[in-house]
Image 1 (cartoon, each protein chain N blue to C red):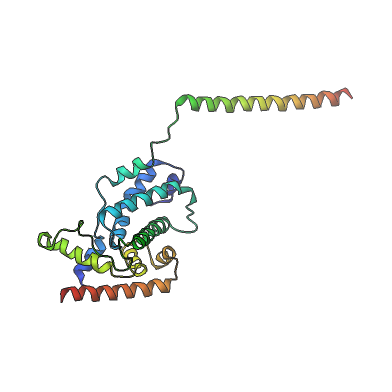
Image 2 (cartoon, chains in turn purple, orange):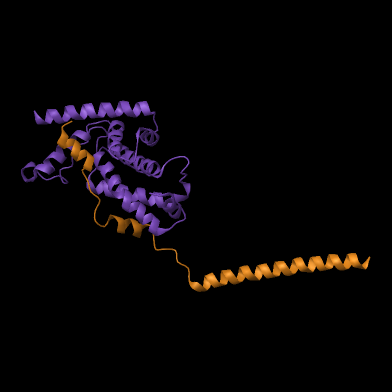
Length: 179
Length: 71
């Protein structure tokens, strides 16, 4: 997104905000999906995040962080808080959530793609949230390790370490699913 | 991680709903449009203020000049 569009968005122009949502809706939903959230949860969280972005547009300072870094910090905080709340309520264990039966079709009616998604989602949910989040963010090309470190409020070295660990554990989990 | 799962991760497992943008826009409320008369009123107030300010400045300058000329 160019600087002109960002300043128009900060002045409260709805068309600029619409362009921002259009540009980032897919990566935001994809990030939430990689965190292991259901479609409904991801949609609700993403809507909340974009609303906050609109409300707090004046707080965005391009000298401190890029727009995707700022946006994903908001999404990340909302998602982590939602996962923690769910964990406290006992609905969804934080680091090893169980897929909800009402959202997933039975294995007999799943297509091959759905089955693979189901396996992957369950494997992702078994990763610690911090590792899962770094892995989920790493797939968005507009965020480098430094940006992910800012979002996660950790060092770049910690990002690399979490990413390595997440990939390793996920590979093992997926291989054990195949066996 | 196997390649097919890596592809799935890249795609993100979820897609935004078709009405996502529409709902995001409706949530932020209607555009803040102001009636044309308000723009005119604002312009008139600005112009009136400028004229009054100018007149006051002129009056002060005239007063200063007459008092200095009287002595």
